Image 1: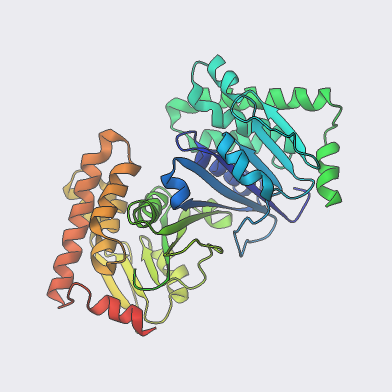
Image 2 (image 1 turned 180 degrees about the vertical axis):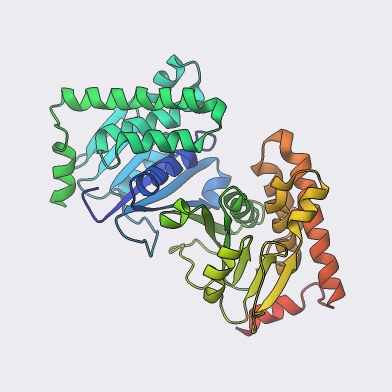
Length: 200
Length: 200
């Protein structure tokens, strides 16, 4: 983690596994990397409407106010989530979107935008339901906020034993897709994204 | 809910279902009663040590800072959770404890203390694992913060279909035990507990 505190919002439909994705990222950063993390889930009108969102804060120190006002990183898996939360993203922040579910018009400017066909990659594994973990793998590759090994351990630790293999394959698919994208656009291991985070 | 904002902390061992208990209470208050709620889960040294805790905030309005500093209600399912969090309870707050897992010495003063043999009640159903939902039922009966029907709906909505019957039985066991206790000590429907909450 390059900053002392990193704020992440993950949002999508109910049933897409938004909360599990948030738990995996929080657990990876805290339990398997020795940092601190909180995951906050809101219940209210938004949840009644079939949408789902979670806030994750990663920190090197204990977290006193686990509230995300302006996320550094926004992960969206539905058009509604994009429309609602994109305006809150910090200038220069990272926007990660499921490519087929989110249409951006106009294309956002002043943000690092990365898209992934997570639904299609999940379908290649025969189980569309692991789309959320494909997103987590892609998140790991493009943000480099949490080590991939810690994320893999957190995936294995957060799903039932019978689902581990499938979910780890989903993680790897997303991670490999993100790594290939970063190589293609010439972002080195600690290059483009991190330098942007530091510029804020 | 008698106050605008009610803060609840639920704590115990990892594996006791602390997070699910917190989700059920938050969901009941928000989705099935039309209020707002947040559930915050922390990952960090405490989670690595095998303990688990969650913070729930119930409100009539959207919640800006979902942080519990001094809970109004503390639910503990382990000795360690009691030792750690009891000093943070608000004066005049409600302390709910699993009777066989938590020994209080000295007996706390200035707080409303309610204990329930949730492990034993869960074992009567043949599944000790539903101890957390017994605690939720008991919580509903003694705090009267959330309607029992909303809590029952939230239980049914939060567990896999095959587990619904068992968990609803667990809820009813805890709720009936709590209702009998309140009748025995002469607390009316909106009597002792609520008046204490209002006195703060």
